[in-house]
Length: 169
Image 1 (cartoon, helix red, strand yellow):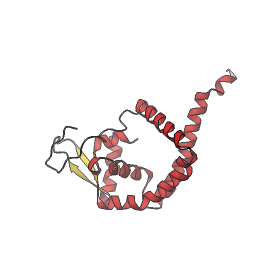
Image 2: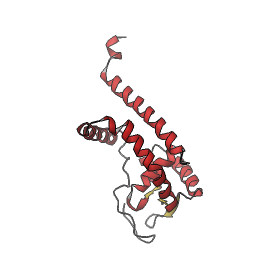
Image 3: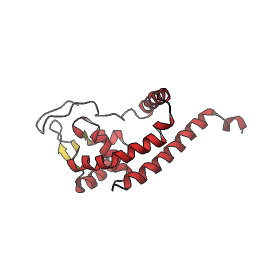
Image 4: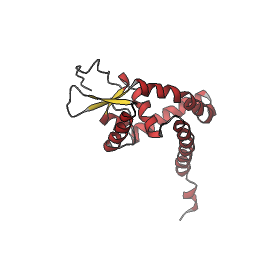
């Protein structure tokens, strides 16, 4: 095998990305667990809280996360039992339902988010000059959209006003 292949910048780029993700994920996991959340539960709460009406269809939540549809169902079941979110029937499609953050879920995020943001600032965004951060965000969005086109599914649809409002999203 050609030694130059091991020095390929593509291998270096993906290796650095994986190492960065692993390091940040470990810090995030320890911090969110201090607030009684798993990393997946925190991700679900954040995805829902950042969506119109603090809700997403279950299929869109699955598309936005690394969870399968059955995985989302299990996490939502557990979080619903814990009072962090609830399900709401989709008025326009009886086969679909929404996961909706409850007040208790938003309160848990309010408790967790300051420490999470501190870790982000210390170990990620604070390591970059503003122009470098902007360039990184643009690059990450471009790559994310190419490899995971469903990552923003349902995040731009207007939230239904109530349970009787049909939506085409």
